[in-house]
Structures are given as structure tokens and as C-alpha cells.
Length: 321
Image 1 (cartoon, rainbow, N blue to C red):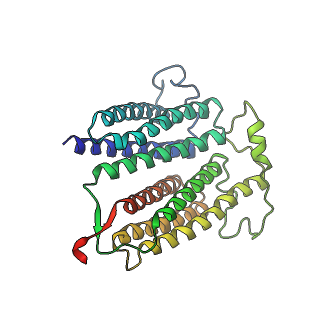
Image 2 (image 1 turned 45 degrees about the horizontal axis):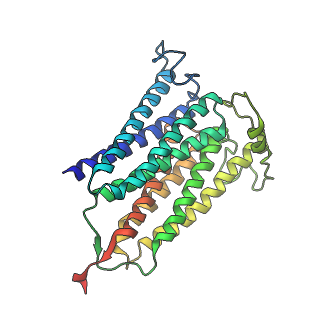
Image 3 (image 1 turned 135 degrees about the vertical axis):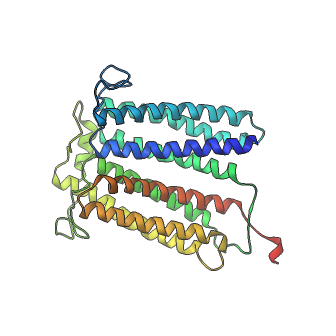
């Protein structure tokens, strides 16, 4: 009974983390990151003084983040007291530490006036927290080994680990592109400003690290630097997509039935994510599609966590021999 309630609490925490990521995406894309320029309140008050939607969105995001932090503390305590809790406690402790680090990054994002490095790390830390929670939920909700008539000859665990790293790097590049307002530096596909080749210029990144007391709500990169950041994300997307498609093909092979649905979902989310990325460029970054693109990246990562879960818990059924 306690195990069931624990799994539900983990799922609730995962859902809340997902909502917070999407809310953060909304704040970033709607230029509401500095709607409340102080921390932790808003203009020295607990709640915005007027009906400004951006200010209220920022404060709701902050208060939900506080609620999430308290939930994380509760989950760690519960896991420590459960009989089966110790196998989850290490992951939950790490998630709690990342949550505290996440709060500090949120403070830095405001105090450093939306510095792209702080904003990027803020998103990356959030998706890592959600990945840990999803892994704990899958383990807590599992009743035992997952049996299949046969398993793949190739161990998919290392391949899945590489895919997870690639998607994390791609999320980092995407967040850095967005926080530098370089998402539309190349408004055409597959070329960039009607050209196939560009000279990369990343000198602006070093400038970002040395500048102080600058409002980053508008891009501090010049056109060639913005193009370089955008193309790094675009080329990274091609490499990541090719690798994940290869991984999904391995998972959906005829002799890997236990992974077939996971592989198909992985391919489906990947194709949808690619379409959303292209739509963002061609439609000039409409807010709903841009937020959906963030959601797609997170769901892609969670699909890899699920595939990794299968690689650890799958066994061949003795009744098929």
C-alpha cells in the first residue's frame, strides 16, 4: 500500500516538474523572465500589485517551484523510512541536491538579468531532475521483471546512455539558442539566410562570460554570432536525430519484442520534434509551437529513460523455451 502511494507521489512530482519546465519555457519565450525583477518577491511584495499576466505567471512559477522543493524533501524522508526505500533514496537525494542548485540558478537568472549561461543551466538542471524522478517512478511502479519471448542480441543500455547524453547536449544547445534570441537567426530551412555554408564565430560566447550588469533580454550577439549558435543547434539536431532513429530501429527489430513499443514511441516523438523545430523557423517562432518544442525535447528524454529502464528489467521468459 505504501509502495503504491509512494509511486503516486513520485508521479505527481514528475508531473509538477514537467509543468514547471513548460512554464519556464513560456516565461522565457514571452519575455516575462524579468516581469518580477527582484527575488523572491515581486517588487518587494509577495504577489504582483496589478493584473499583469506576465508578473503573475512569474510568481506562480516561483511558488510552484517552492511547492516542488517541499515535495522533494518529503519524498526523500519517505524513501528513507520505507522498507524498499533505500534503493530509491540515492536518486532522490541527488534530485533534491539538483533542486537546491536549481533554485540558486533561478536566483542567478534574475539577478544576472537573464544571462544566457544561467538560463541554459536552469533548464538543463530541470530536465535532469525530471529524468531522475521518472526513473524512480518507473522502478517504484514496476512489480518485477519484464518478461519477453526473446531479447535483442545487442545490449541496448550503452546505446541508450549515449542517446541520453546527446539529447541533453541538444537541449543545452537549444536553450542557449533561445536565451540568446538566436532562434530566428536562420529564418529558412535547410539553408541559413539563403546560404549553405557560413563561417562560425563563437567569440560572442567568451564576451558573454566577461560582461557584467547587462540586460540580456535582448540578444547581445551580432548576426554572425547568432547564426553560429543557431547552426550549432541545427547541426546537433541532425546528428542526434540520426542516432536516435538508429537506436529506435534496433529496439523495434523483430527479435526485440519487449522494446518494440518503446522504440516506436521514440521514433514518433523524434519525428514530431523535428517537425516542430522546422515549424518554429518557418512560422517565425509562434509561442504555442515553441513551447511544444520544449515539451517534445523533454518527452524524448523521458522515452530514453523508459528504454533504459527496460534494458535493466527485461528477462527472457522460461515458458518460451
